[in-house]
Image (cartoon, rainbow, N blue to C red; front, side, top):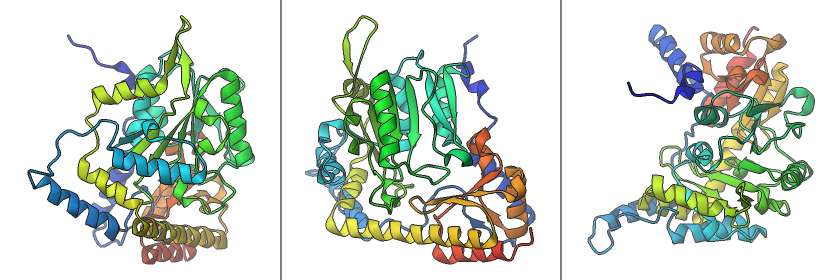
Length: 402
């Protein structure tokens, strides 16, 4: 009889957001007239911008003409997009990332999970708690539940920022601005992690999917703003939230050429080359029309439109944050991130709070326990709805008898 990867049997029964969708579907079936406002899953609601739409149309037209039709593209991404990324997102900010260090993909969710393909199974992996579930779940898929995975508690007491691990950790996942807590790391805090990684010859997997939502200019938007981070870190970026690409699918991962390690025999190995080999083997590249759409994000008009979209969602975050505070909730995030992290009333169970909020206010959020044990007693709301729906949701919560 054939065998399976039994590590999958160690995972929870279903993915967090699948469970939420099932609960909402059941409630909707029994309450068909309920006006449900969704502030749960981090999916955008604004359409892609005119500059992006126009670029998509042009690219589709190109694909319909023999002379401009394109088949397989480079697995790493087309040069026209990689050059724009390097110039706009890094070089204009004084960061020396080059196009050859950028790999275009179909989403950071994919890459943060797939990056484990180039890492050894004996690595000890440190993951914050609470955390975006993909980091932990894909690690379990690869190496199973074992003492090779350590959780770094992020609590209200430490500002939801992880402490440097006392025990040896070879790889650490960091996500800032953070999903789910909405917290950020200062330059000094991020430098501590870079210094630790360099000293311990460890690797930082830095998820910067929400960097566009940072409003405070003193907060680093890339780990490569920290000196020598290119020697110890891989960074993941996405167009999903800032440019509305959740249904379009495009992202990129930065693997610096300076990032190297050694085999047990002492042979120096480039992670850039390893990731290139992985992508060339397992990935045929992001579609041409999608990469043209992403390129349009970097046009002057595209940059203006993206900034307007981000500002729209951050206005929602401000509405949620202010309203919850006025209601008397303890609140975190929502200032440099599109997520607001709130404390359940009287430290209550987060799934119980989910059920009450859905049944009594017809609002969908995300229970903190879904992000890890440290998330119990907390709840996440997102800013990715319309301003009108967001204001209505907060008004319902203000009128809610707890």
